[in-house]
Amino acid sequence: MIHISENIAINEDEICEEFIRSSGPGGQNVNKVATAVQLRFNVAGSTSLPDDVRQRLIFLAGKQVTQDGVLIIHARRFRTQEGNRHDALHRLIHLIQKAAEKPKIRHKTRATLASKMRRLEDKHHRGKIKQQRSSVLQDE
Image (cartoon, rainbow, N blue to C red; front, side, top):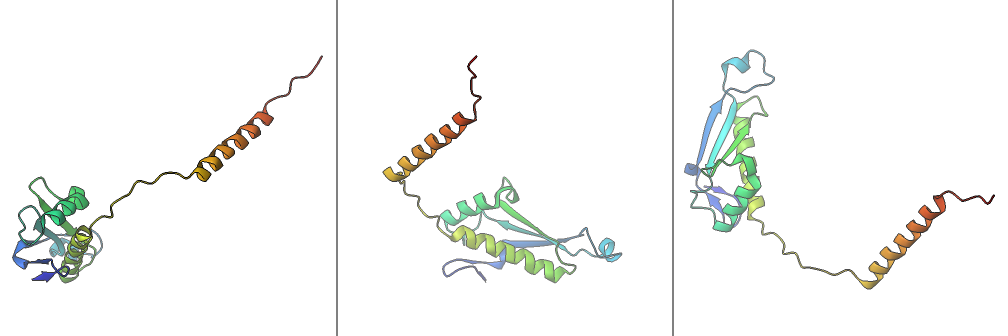
């Protein structure tokens, strides 16, 4: 079990890891060893996530989620499989923790009378400055 928060834990069977060849630095080793990790997590079919967290996770992940509801994380930052495995898992945990936070409810506020007056005063001041820039007519 992977513990995300107090009331969210994911079963390790729900996560699928596949090792693929990575691009980037590593010399000849890059062409021989599959060090990059492609982590797959079925968000839509996960029983360990509450519905509201699942919806926010799909929204947060964006293009990383397929149409079937599978979250795909590519990790190729490190030169070792173990480093990339930890990186991918850490990124998944971070995404789920972010999705578990409930968004704050926005309450509508109104502008105060003083702020409205300041805005109008600034507009009048700006208008006077622009008016002074205009060319002066000369008497003949």
